[in-house]
Image (tube, rainbow, N blue to C red):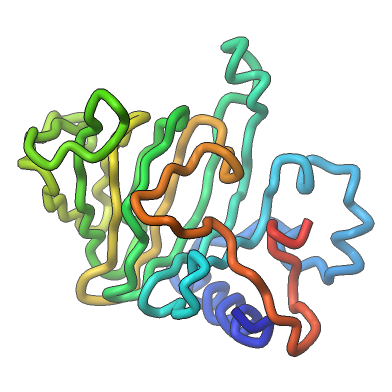
Length: 221
């Protein structure tokens, strides 16, 4: 992705988030130099902040995701079962934009429709070897109520609805009808090692520096 495209997406994303009354923390708007002065803070070690990805495919509107990690815990705490065990993200999925099929080995997450269009998820159970089970149905909690679905779903979440996805559940999603603001509440998030994709794609984008960054991405840290 070009840095100019990333900068435009950041501006548009902030405006979209504000339209629903959500506000990002002050460090979100630090200049690159101001943020580098916080290099010893947990902002850097926990990978808090802006995250724009096209999964290395070069077409953000077709396959991509806007994320901002608001808070994140420590893997060491998760392993010992006490301490900062949780994470929160706010995300934007554009209408018909694909977030590709993937699963997590450790992370349990709630995906919440915070506003805009509907979230449509494609869901699969995992086979014994971790691959996608395209035959068996799947059971997931939707706002605490058990929902039984055939392999692939789909599961449609309207504004205010949420689904809990446990480790191993394969999922991909898009927005239907309009761009969608998505909340994610989860156990500790580790985007470097805990994303298993169906396709051979990258979690982070390579950035072509055609103009200075508006804000640093977590992949810049």
